[in-house]
Image (tube, rainbow, N blue to C red):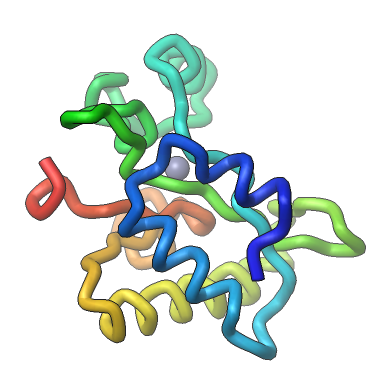
Length: 137
Ligand SMILES: [Zn+2]
């Protein structure tokens, strides 16, 4: 089950992505995790690019920035929780991958395509999951 903070972060996120996150949260035996980012404003993404937190060049390409009609975010970031606190330490990469695999499994079950950052070839964005632009322009 999604915790309150995750539910708050999912406000303004596309309902299909919410369905996937919610189904993943019901899977037993996964490391603890929570949604730590959904919607990002254009200004927030510009800041992230400027400071190297985002690998993008154009903030409009960011799937967190709301787009479409009505405008919604097509991406979320999740964090692994250790003692209830989000962690991005390298030693927890296997936990991120485990959760990422669960996102891919649910994606197939619900027939909702998901691009997961842990599968990217160049810059691995382990906590990032998005609805592909090809399917959700
Ligand atoms: Zn992200």
